[in-house]
Length: 168
Image 1: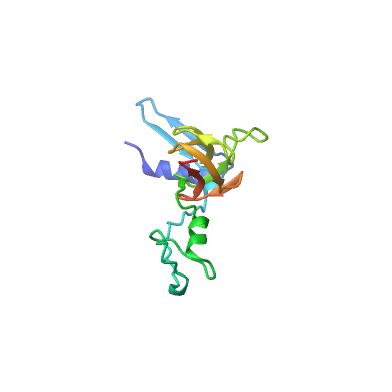
Image 2: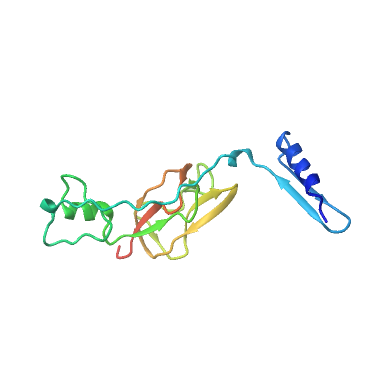
């Protein structure tokens, strides 16, 4: 049995020191690993919030019915709004919170650029989360029409990273 006071004391000692992690193994096969990562303290993740659609009846074009949840900005026709939203485009969204990288290392050629044809399963970018590099693969085959993330910048869960035209 592990003495919780012992574990709490270890945590306090690690917390008050510059040591990042400690691992202790007993002869009975019990292992305790305590680690801290200063960059992760105080991190909070906001849940995605659905925004209501803003539709102005005077601006509706009878030839166009906007997709559910698409907002039309003031002074914008529905057709322009559809082009702005990338009608017919497939979106590759971030599966996690992290830092976006378009290439395998600084100065290297990006995995994909606007206009490139991509195949399903092809690596599009890397998202670094908790010091782990996660390759993000395309869920679609098509042509990259937009890259919406900036290199070495944070991305949120569900944020659109790429728009791909399946017909391109």
